Length: 103
Image (cartoon, rainbow, N blue to C red; front, side):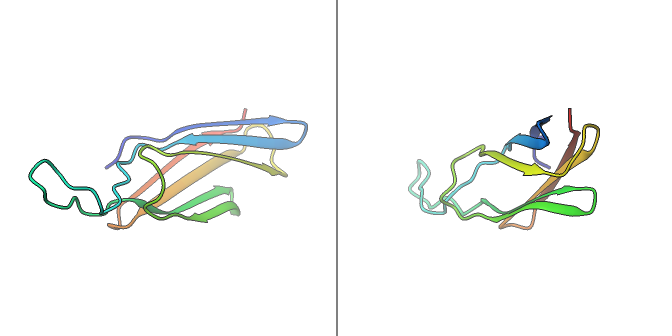
């Protein structure tokens, strides 16, 4: 399983700011290794963020995102102590889910 995501969520004036750093190789499938063989595609394809049962972000990504991607987004309607859950799924079917309480 991949390394844990580093997530920070802070609320100010009713708006929650979330920052997420995801550890992932994000291979495009176009690069070649030292032997000249193509490195298979391996990238995050879906990202979803929820607070309780409410989805606050859904995104579909392709191989055009850099290694160890950083994601920042904002949403309203949460309060301090609520938990933000972020889940990614990659093109190989691997998944990672982490959560943090809003400060």
